Length: 191
Length: 191
DNA sequence: CAATAATTGTTTCGACTCGATACATAAATG
DNA sequence: CATTTATGTATCGAGTCGAAACAATTATTG
Image (cartoon, rainbow over all chains, first blue to last red; front, side, top):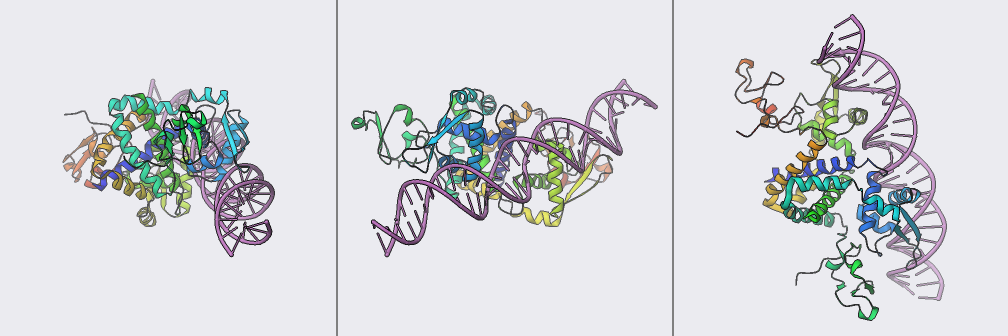
């Protein structure tokens, strides 16, 4: 039924908007929360303005301003990248990590948990499918977790004294790295 | 699993944001699309600035500006209400209805349709539950369809020469009225 | 290898978003 | 009828966001 899809589109817009406007509480604005949230989940190759720009499907200029605000407020630091002299490496400060413990998205999380309970798992599958289609239609990237990537080699980093290895960037990966999301992530074809 | 709820919250935020930024194409901005969309679905008792304010969980000032822009662009008309001399009745112009045929939310609709197909019905149930919890937590209103309301009397408007009747506002209701969403809608207890 | 093209990041601009506040009018309450 | 509440508008300030212009760096190409 098309009417179900239409109803779902309206519901998604409304839920997203409600949750987003709830976020104005606290020290950050919605876009700033989204950026800080991303930076806390992204691996070290993905904590750059450009990766964030792609994740949020926005423009470099907008991202630059958001990051400026976060730096001014002391939640992130920025320093020139060594890998690429055009790029900037971003890190979250301790103050930033502490702030995330009160991330207003947690309101939505508890709402979902109480509304759905164990059915959350099923919802997750469906929302993932929608996001994937949406991202593909926008010529964007999925930003999946490192260990789900076709370039990820589990237990393949012995030469680098690390547990794992990225075949695209040709660098060693720690266990922590492998659980974070990455701008380069590409789905691995089903075995 | 709490992690499913967390993943879902992130997915909902991301889908909502992606879809919203896609909307900048065309003649309207996201908030203006949301307002025009609401006005096309709302019944005649709910097409006022205040009802729209509640629907969007925003403030009267913000709504006023959005409506000003829509009127300036010729998509709605505003005139003082006769029922309540403080209120303003809003109507969509033909130009407004025509614009809605190209509502950018239709991109999301087709994306959902292709990604989920018939499973859309199940998603709808889950999203409705989430929205209801979210709205209740915000002390807001559901804005459900008129005919699902506890004040709706099917085939009860004979004295008004209309098919149906609203027991709260004490007015007759057409078939068309009964299918629209209403600011006063309250769930009917299960029979 | 040098010229050209593409990428990254910042800055500036203008229109819109949005909450907060103040104000005027009208309705509801007592 | 006085007080309180509700509705709508106008204004302010900080943020959001896309677009365009610019500088620096990297990638590509001939």
